[in-house]
Amino acid sequence: MKVAILLYDGMTALDAIGPYDVFATTLKCEVQFVAKKKGLIKLDSNMGYLHADYSFSEVVSADILLVPGCIPPNYKTPMKDEDTLNWIRQIHETTKWTTSVCNGSLILSAAGLLHGVTATTHWGSFGVLQSLGTTPTHERVVRQGKMITAAGVSSGIDMALQLVAWEFGEDASKGVQLILEYDPQPPFDSGSPKKAPAALVEQIGGMIQELAKQEPRN
Amino acid sequence: MKVAILLYDGMTALDAIGPYDVFATTLKCEVQFVAKKKGLIKLDSNMGYLHADYSFSEVVSADILLVPGCIPPNYKTPMKDEDTLNWIRQIHETTKWTTSVCNGSLILSAAGLLHGVTATTHWGSFGVLQSLGTTPTHERVVRQGKMITAAGVSSGIDMALQLVAWEFGEDASKGVQLILEYDPQPPFDSGSPKKAPAALVEQIGGMIQELAKQEPRN
Image (tube, rainbow over all chains, first blue to last red; front, side, top):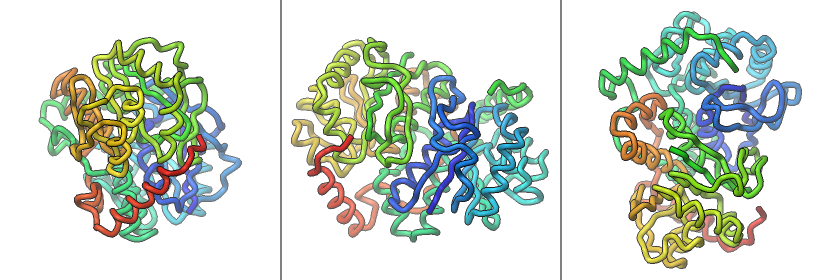
C-alpha cells in the first residue's frame, strides 16, 4: 500500500513519525513524505527538521493519506493554502483511507472533507473543529466511512496499528506492536483531559486557546 | 537543559522523535540532532530521512545524551566507528544523563559505558547485549547511576517522560503527557514478548537473529 504523509513547516514531528514507523514496520507499505516543496520542513519546536522527499506534483494518488497536526496556530497556514487543500482533495479522491493526527483534522475540515460528521482532534482544539462544522468527540480513533481522525500527537500510533489490523490482519498489527515494543508504561496517568489534574487541564487548555488566537509564523 | 540526540544512517526514526517531542514540549530543553556529518540521515526503512543540524565537532557537551536504535544489523556500523564512540565518550563525560532507546544500548556498550551493569535493549537483542558484557533485563526503563536505557523503539517516550519528571517535576511531566495526549490505547496487548502470541515472538525473534548475523549496509 502507498501511504502519503503530508509535511508542512511548523508541524509536530511525532504526529508523522509515529504512524510512519508503524506502516514502515509492516514491510508492506511504501511511505512517502510529501510537501508543497520538497526539502527540509521546519518543526514547530524550531529545533529540527523533517524532510519531504516528494513535492505535491510528484504524488498524484495514495491508498492512505495522513495529515499531521502542529502547535497552534500553525495549522492556519495550510488551512488557507489552496495548493495544499487542492492536493489533499485530489489525493482523497484516490484513497482507501484519508486520515489525520491531532489538529491535522482541522486541515481536512478546511479541505471540506469532514463537514457535518463526527471526528476528533487534539482535545485543546475541539472549539476550532466545531467552528468548522465538524462535531468533536473524545474517542481516540474515530472512523467515519473512509475518514479516520485520531486525537492528539501520540494517538497516531494507535490509529496506524488499527489500520494495519484492518488492512493486513490482526497478526500483522500484533507483530508490528511487538517489533516496536509498544507496551506503554508512562510514569503517570495524565494523557487525557479526563485523567490529568484539573488545574493542568485548565492551564494548558488556556495556553492553547491563547496560541490559537495568534497569527501563524510558519 | 541541552539534549543531544545522536543520528546515524540506518537508524529508526521513532527512537529519536518520541523522546525529542517529549523534551521539546517542556519548552525547557534545547534539543540538538547530531551526527558525524551534518545533513540528511537515511532511515532504516529506506523510505525517508531525518536531518542532523550539527556535526560531532560542533557539539562538545550535553546535559542529556540520547542514542537511538535501528533495525539489526545497522548498529554494527556505529559500534565499530571510532569517531562515533569517541564522541559518545566525550559527551558522556559532560552529561547528567546518558541514555539509549532500543538497541542503541549496544552502541553505548561498545563505547564501554555499560560494562558489568544491568541494562535493557530491544527484547530481540538481549543476546548481543549480553555478549558485550552487559546484563539484559526486561524492565522498560532501567536506571544505573546516570545511565538510562530503554526497551524497544516506543519505550523512549516513557523514558523521556520519566526524565522530565526527575528534572522538572511531576507536574511538568504530566503536562507534557497531556499535551502529547499520550493516553495509549493500542488495539491489541501485544507489545512485549511476555504478552504477544508465542508463535509471533518466535517468528519475529528468529527474524531478528537472522538479521543480526548479516553485514551492515549503512
